[in-house]
Structure formats: structure tokens, C-alpha cells
Image (cartoon, rainbow, N blue to C red):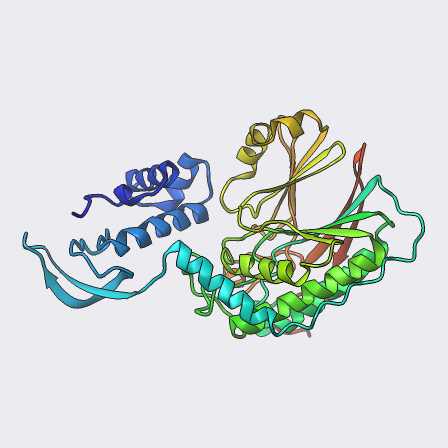
Length: 398
């Protein structure tokens, strides 16, 4: 038996709340988002998830579809004329889809295929430095890199960008930032999400938005993995150990997990490298009196993140003095101190605008940051690498 409303197909109370508020605001995402305290992109993603599940059960709020379709298929459009016992009529179109368990197996199979092509890991010699600081934590933060994005400077009036350029830019930044870092025992490498531009072979985001991509996802993942392997190797030349945080973005919710698992399997026998579990959307690291929380920034606004941090980690909250959210998503550097003392910082992106963002006049300086935290005193040093080829130019100079 089919349910009557889209909200009836929500799997969680939060999904049901978002759909109901969205419908109450005439399905206007821009109106529903402020009422829910989240951004419009998150509303769209949650509604899309519920719609996909509803369509797998034969329900479509767009076309009044009320006829069940075969298991494993979802409604996409009208291609077969159907009519049920109650006289409901519709044209339905279906395609194959996967359950969450099947998707996890597919990701693992995909990762296994890619890791077979990677060179065998050779343990790195420990740095020759005899004295390492245990009071400093250099933290390299990779803003939205969008590996796989294709941007044409003639169209965007910014700079060309593709997977090879993305890798070159990041490696130059890594070289600079690692060389600038103090010699410490530990280092932290943080990817804030949307490292990969697309979420799969169809060149779309997790929610299904079509993107400008420059090559196949297999090629992008391979280049991304090689870039991270070089970066980690460079860090191990300076520090005894490195921990890597791989956040999931709204573009690469699944492919981010695939990339993290590639690295996890590659460094499986290397005790100096820790790849944090990538499956969640929130990650936390405590270093002395500093508490760092990492999230892409698309699902919850910074103001709410600041207020929920004490309840997320009450013991760590009480034992720290400096608390900071490390965020991405918006491509602009924005720093804010909240009422409870939490600092939220949205970090600059690595990628330039693509065609859509340039046309909408969304642009930002491309840069990578390294923040050095002191065990007792919080943020102590900051290094910034500006991408050199970020110039804008006129059509004509006379």
C-alpha cells in the first residue's frame, strides 16, 4: 500500500521535519532553509534523498504516481502508461538503483580495483631531525579542491583548471607549507570536503546536479590518491607522524569515502600514518587545550555548530580552552567568534570558479592554509600559500 505524502517516506525525524517545512513553504527552498536553520543546499539534498526513496516504492510527488514499480528501480519520468484499480493514471520511467549496502559493496569493489594499480608502499625513513616539539601541531587545511572540475579561463575570466592543474597547485602548496612548518612530532592534514568535484561516473553531485567535469572519475580518483600519497610522504619527511581527516562534501559524499579507503588500505602497514574513519559527517581532534571540529559546512550552519559542540563532546569541552570549527563549502574565508567563544572558520578553496559560479559572480581567492596550534595556547602560527595564477584580466587593454 502506498503512503499519501512525501513526508511519509522519510526515514528519520529530521528528514520528515525538513520535508514538512519545505512543503509548508510552498516547496520554496529559499524560504524553508531559514525556518529550519540550515542552508538551501542541505534542504535540496534531504528532499532529494526522501524523493529517491519514495520513488523506489512507486511514489512520485511530481507526477502523482501511485503504481508500484519493481524492486530496485525508481521513478524518473514518464515512458509507460499505467493505470491502477482506483483509476490513477501515469506515465512511468524507471532505472536501476542500489540499496545502501549494495552501494557500500560497490565502493569497496571500486576501491579494490584502484588500489591494485597503486605502487607498493615502501615505508619512509624517519626525519633526521633529532629534536621534535611535542607542543606544536602543524595543521594543513585543504579547502574545496574539486579535483575533476573543468574551468576555462576564456569563459570564467579567472584561470584554467582541470585535474592536472589541481594536483600541481596542491603539491606546490604542500611543498611550501611543510617547509614552513616547525619540526614537531605530530602533524595533521585536513580535507574539508569536496576534494572531488563529482560523486561518480555520471559527473553529478551527490544530489544529482550536473557538473562541468574534465575526465572520468577513475582518472580523477587515481590522480587524487597520488596527490595525497605525495603530500603524506612530504609530511613524513618533516614529522614523525601524520593524521589525515577526510571530510565528505555535498559534491563527493560517496567518492570521498572511496578516496579515504584507498589511502587507508595503502597505509595499512604504516604506523606513522593514521587515516581517520571517513564515514561520518563530523570529525573531532583534541590537542592539549585545543578542540578542533571538522565539517564540510553544507549540512549545518556555523552558528548552530558552535552551539551544539559542548553537547557533542562534553568531556573534551570541559578539558579545553580553545575550540574551533574548521569548515569549507562556501569557497570564501570567513572567520567568526560565537557567543560561547567557539571560533568557526570557513577556509579558502583551492579551485577557481567553474562556468556556473563565474556566471553567478561567485568567486574567491585560491589558497591553502597551515595553522600551527600550541598545546597550551591555541593557534600560534599561520602560513598561507596563495595560488599564483589567480589573476583576473580584461577583454581588452588599450
